[in-house]
Amino acid sequence: MRRWIAGIALVLSVLACSLGAAALVWMAARQIAPSGPPLEATLPPPTPTPSEPRSIPTPSTPAPPSTADQTFDAIARLVEGLRGLKATGPYTRALMTQAELRAYQKKKFEENYTPEEARRDTLTLAAFDLLPRDFPLRDFLLDLYTEQIAGFYDPDTKQFFVISDRTAPGILERVTFAHEYTHLLQDQHFDLVALGFTDDERKRPKDLSDDAMLARRALVEGDATLTQLLYLSRLPPAERRQWWEAVQSQPSPVFDRAPRVIREELTFPYDQGFAFVQHLFEEGGWEAVNAAFRDPPASTEQIMHPEKYRLHEAPIRVSLPPLTDTLGSGWHMADENVLGEFFLKVYLEERLATDQAERAAAGWGGDRYAVYVNEGAGQDLLVLWLAWDNADEAAEFVEAYRAYAAKRYGHGPAREAPGQATWVGTDVLRLEWQDAHVLLLRGPNEALLQRVRARIPFPR
Image 1 (cartoon, helix red, strand yellow):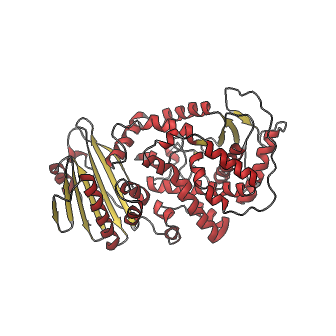
Image 2 (spheres, rainbow, N blue to C red):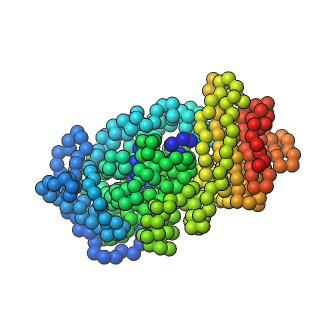
């Protein structure tokens, strides 16, 4: 799923505040007891909106103070106190209209997410039965970002923007500012570019899997969400209600019709990331959260099970051989990476109940997947090698996946032998297991799967 799987956010280095995701954690916000005096903010009068993003001067850019300046500076001071970090250098902040956001995104797409990359992502997701092969992913994501993003911070340019078609910062803009200002503080203290949040591939950590990158995004967004909720807790109850009503009133037709995998990926960093950071905060305060930035989580498994992060349970490394020569003319690799526990659960949920999918994915130890496609023939090949914590966890997955396969094909396996089962329909699925390892092969016919299987050194 290439770089897309690493996080939905303006392709891909920026950290975004999503209105939909913010709504997910409102119930948690209600549980945070208000403390300290409420923030008093006076809204500025309306002013004409220029065609360019409207710059809001910062202390590093001297300018006569305005009511908007005073409002955002007051929020910045409060957020610094709540988060326990102070800004250490200059930055740029601005308001951006929805139209400007779409233009900005289109430029980022042109620079960083080509139609060819989007096509490879689509084919990879289709191989996991998560999207139709003809899904217009690139255009859909552009529409989704325009609808959902309320603000974003770009570590490459050290800029952050609050999205608004109004000139006076209302409650949505103020809360979004608190979220994005947290990203600024994270960057200045922990270097988000070094953590991988950059469009410059030369600056990204080497050998960082998509799953590990999604885990880092969950840490970063979870921290900003917790700080945002602490900021909300300082507001008077009437303003909190106003924020909730404003969030609820935001239209979301694109998000509502999004394929489940896209909705899940969009909300994971805020939902599960918030739960992860809250766990750290309750155990050791901000120092525990700061320590996680210095030693970031290595997998979505560690996000979903914070105790595994505490125990430093590193993912098991799995490797697959190159298969292009084995497959023959017309075939090419669409993607190879780590799926991770989170996306394994999402994959299983296509045909299994959520609780069964969660149990089956728990106990994940590591994996490697590869997707090859032959577009001329309309065919694909999926190879997924899963390593589990132990043989019992592997057996639980096999049982669940047999149920998945039975629903996919409408019947049980065509053939079985000790440690393997094969389903035959419009394509062929072969499942093998031994001890704590599981191999899944799915392709257009048995002859091709036999050639592929001969190249894979399974079991170890």
